[in-house]
Image 1: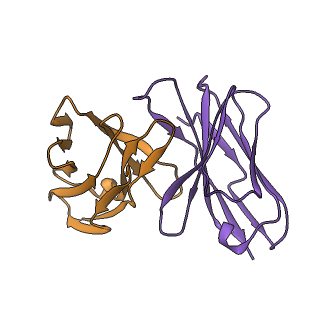
Image 2: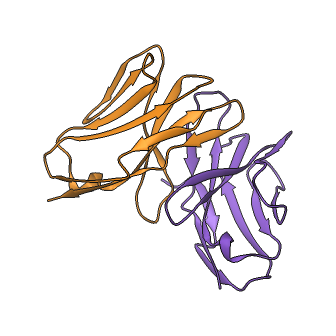
Length: 113
Length: 110
């Protein structure tokens, strides 16, 4: 049963455009994440966010930014996309605790032409 | 270094066979290692996890082993089924970061 929802499923755009992806979780978790999964399936965390703290992976370009209206929503905005941004973007949420399970959404596939 | 090295990159087994995936690491903050399973078009989902206090955890046909001395873990799938065809990731947990292996793409042939 899906509890982390992402929209859109797919997005095709041109270099230089701005895009925004949405994520909502209905699990009541305090912490949400954005991951990038490349064509080789490599998963890399981009942002970790709860209602008190944003942690940014230092390798993430500044054109990426998370946006949150409340703890159930964490959107991802990309200003001026580049070809290397083509990937699947996965949103996840997690409860408090080191051993808590991460719940992932189905992902948004971005293609930059 | 909390990165994990995962092998093999891809694997094909016959239905009913045993699948073995391995991961190694250099350092771990919490010695907690989950395995995630990802089907095409879906996000990863937790399959099984193990803590350093244990050296083995079993869940049905899936068993994960942890060797703290050698800093290795493995995932064994017995009686592999076509429905097990997916990508499998091991993961290492840091204080504020998660380190996924590069994944093993498993294909089970009927």
